[in-house]
Structure formats: structure tokens, C-alpha cells
Amino acid sequence: MTRVFELLGKRWTGLIVTVLMTQPAYFAELRRAIPKISERMLTDRLTELVAAGLALREVDAGPPLRVTYRLTESGRALEPALSELARWAERYMAEDEGCP
Amino acid sequence: MTRVFELLGKRWTGLIVTVLMTQPAYFAELRRAIPKISERMLTDRLTELVAAGLALREVDAGPPLRVTYRLTESGRALEPALSELARWAERYMAEDEGCP
Image 1: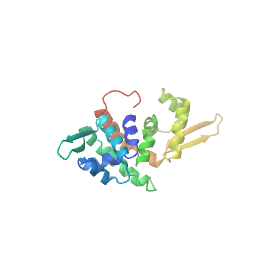
Image 2: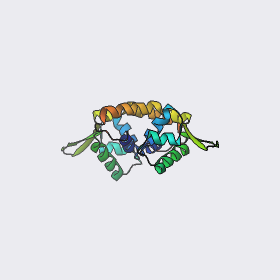
Image 3: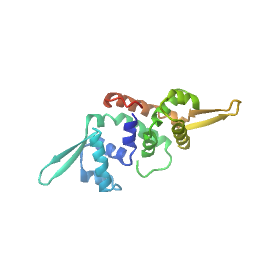
Image 4: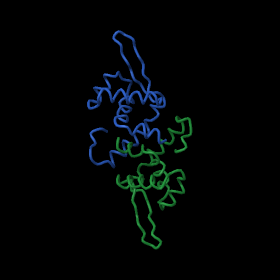
């Protein structure tokens, strides 16, 4: 269980998973949904999520070439835990972290 | 929310919180409940939990001198999220990590 905490404990990962929980997204859509994240950081976090089996990377040759990210079943199954933690954070984490 | 993930993402923290979720414990009891953790690591993790407001450190002058750790209200309120994550880990995390 620590591994999932370690993964989700990395900055931005929880937010990326939360965005993908609603629907799959292109890389550019993820960058627009999370304006403060750098391209490099988003690439790294997505690579970690794919390596952990929580997300899938699908390449559409196009043209134009497009890469879509979607959560796997185990990724989507994090939803109850994430919403419990969001509820907890809303109640017990006073100051706005700016990076929910 | 990332901060709570960061905290709980540190090795042993989730397990320490899970042990304290059942009842307050003396330092020695925590060491017995988590045999693989070093004294130094347990001290550091407990200090972080207290600093984050998730646990309390109570000193009983005795003699003998005894230190008890107990979860605060916000610490105990993590229970639903932790049990959801434990359920998720049971289902989706194949190999036994040895440090649940």
C-alpha cells in the first residue's frame, strides 16, 4: 500500500489521476487542465502512471500524431479512495495548497 | 491533498497510522507492532505525524517515563480513505510488499 501512496504522493500525480478519472485526455488537454505543470513534469508523471499500470498511453498515428492517456481498470478503481481523501482534505487541510 | 499523499507516501507512515487507528500506543508497543522499522525511522515518522497534526505525543513522567502516541481527530478521520486504499491494494497490488 505504501507504493500507491508513494506514487500518489508525488506532486501533480493525484491531480492528473483526478482529471483522467472524468475522461481520457490528449497530452495537450492535460496541460491545459493543469496550467502550472511543466511539459517535462507531466511527461514524467504520466510515464510513472503507465509503468505502475494505472494508466494507458495510446498513440494515434493520424496525421496529426495524437497521444491519448486513459486510466486502466485499477486506475479507475482508485476513485473511492481519492474521493474519501478529497473529503478529508477539504475538512482538515486549512490553507489552499494551490495544487489540490 | 498532495501533502497528505506525500506524508502517507513515506515508508512506514501508512502502517503506523493503521496501528494507531486501533488504539493509542507507547513507543515500545509501536516498535513491537512494526518489527522491521528502526528506532530512528519510527521516531522520525512519529515526529512528522505530530507536526502534521495527525498524531499527539503525550509524556507521562512516571516513573517510569512513558511516551504515548495517539491519533488526533483529523488522524482518525483518515480511516475511510485508508480502508478504501487497503481494499484497492488488496485487489490490485499483486505481490506482497512486506510493508503493507
